[in-house]
Amino acid sequence: MNEGITVQPNFNDILLAVAEIYYSDREFVYITHRINSYSIDPIIYLETSKIKNLKGFIAVCPNKSLIESFRVEKLFFNKPFAVYQTLDEALKYKEKLLSGEH
Image (cartoon, rainbow, N blue to C red; front, side):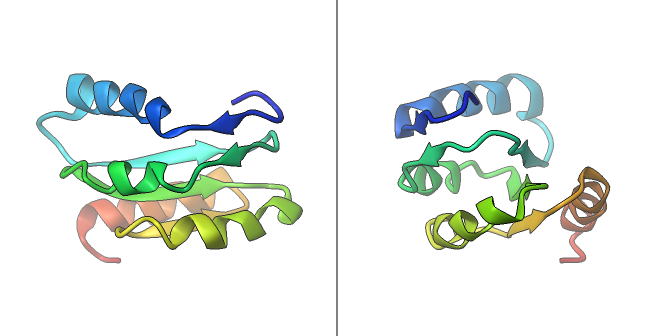
């Protein structure tokens, strides 16, 4: 995502299409690597939560100052939602989610 944009609920259509094309027959975890600062309309998570085979959401955020925004976003997502500072940590948690260990 570009610096300064606002992610709107209609952006979720892209995720729904990707989920249907690539993950229709298996479970998956969405990992986002937030390098840029941008806003998210948290309503987007209400729709994202409805993807049945989506097992969780992980944000990789190396910038500690951006982590606070995830606390609000997490309130709108009714599946596991985690924030890590490194991709390695996120990938380990992803494996736990997919194996049912969370």
